[in-house]
Length: 223
Image (tube, rainbow, N blue to C red):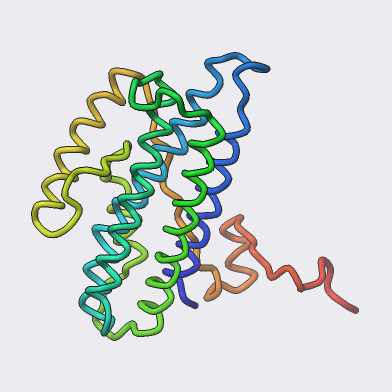
């Protein structure tokens, strides 16, 4: 099974859901403070994921794919556009002068467009990396998950994203984000971790209390 592809699909399904949940929170009908936690949850989870993807998938693509350098560059450019859109969401949320004149619908529309574009590029990278996987390659799915645990929780579109400068910039951004997250009591959600159960039999799944059967299979065994 293409675990990298499946894991990325699961992650973006969650990110899209969190974006829509935040975008549908209307402070005029609900408690005005209700927009903060759902929007911060989306911003934190999306920021962590795209930073991890930049750190893990782009070097892997440059090493494994024949056109990996160009595709890595295109992916980073798209990540920057997404981060810029998320920065506008954050500015609108906290009343920054950088978002004066922007409506909530306009900033969410931009975020949707850029998140979908990022999803498309990342899905293509993951598909091709899965197809060209060779013996001795690292477990990119696990590396992506672990990188996400230690990635910045806020959008930083204007810092370096590539090479040593990019790694150092992410480390500095992570320290700054952790400080402000602690000061504001802001919790970053746990990254999505896709479980590949294809190799597990039904008995194993039941013993693990984690059954996961194909949808087309009948609910009860035929007699």
